[in-house]
Length: 80
Image (cartoon, rainbow, N blue to C red; front, side):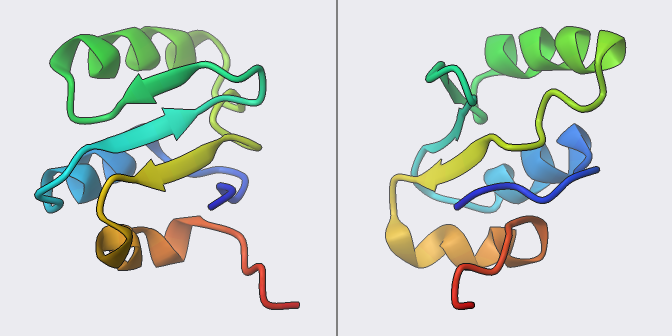
């Protein structure tokens, strides 16, 4: 699920906390980071503080496909 532009990291982290399984952020360069990991959250926050557009174009990948609904407002519509 590709992220929309101008998504806030704090919103993604809050939604990830609602999920029972792992939730990953996959960057455009192919890096895969677990959004439920505190280390990842701190790392991403430090990166976003210097370049707020870094999340755009990345993807959210849920371990449990049913939990993808939590991120529906933050991802691009692929049904076009």
